[in-house]
Image (cartoon, rainbow, N blue to C red; front, side, top):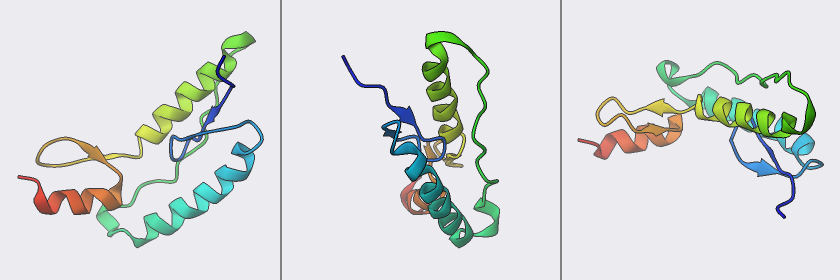
Length: 98
């Protein structure tokens, strides 16, 4: 059986229940640094931790699903091909996308 992991709402990666509380503040700080280095037209609003109101055993699954969708919302589409990228990777991709 796979251990229960929690998904970071900022980057979408999985972490253990103890390490997620350490990771999220560091990840948010890293997000701010990277976002401030982007051109103004590519900057995004700060991600908010999704609040899921459910009960029972499905709570972790619902929280992880909401966190994953929050992380995916941070991706930006390419104007040429429509693929989604993190803003810093989008700039690199657009140089070679036709």
